[in-house]
Each structure stands twice: as structure tokens, then as C-alpha cells.
Length: 68
Image (cartoon, rainbow, N blue to C red):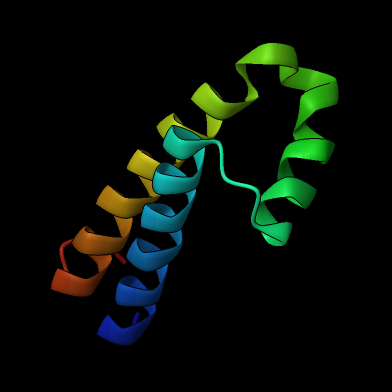
């Protein structure tokens, strides 16, 4: 995997982590939350915080060439 894809993946993870923490009203995040709320209910923002942290770590590892 090219390091650029790892950087993009880490950026998306940071977006999800920051949006979940601030409960953002950004349209893309609101669309994601609307779909996930059916499954996660009131914990949907916590879900995006955890998923954002995991994707950020995996993106950093991919950018460094440790995985993939």
C-alpha cells in the first residue's frame, strides 16, 4: 500500500474521531450518524470516536509500512 493511502486513512479516522467528540453538524457526519443510529442508538457518537481512533492508528501504521 502506498504511504499516501495510509495518510488519507489516518485523516479520515481523525475526522471521525473529532466529529464524534464534538457531535458535529457537518453534513457528511450527519449522514453517517443517521445510518448508524438505527444500530447504535444514543451511543452512536461514542462508536465514531472508537472507530475513528482505530482507523487513525491503522492509517499511521499503513503509512509507515508496518502493515499492508
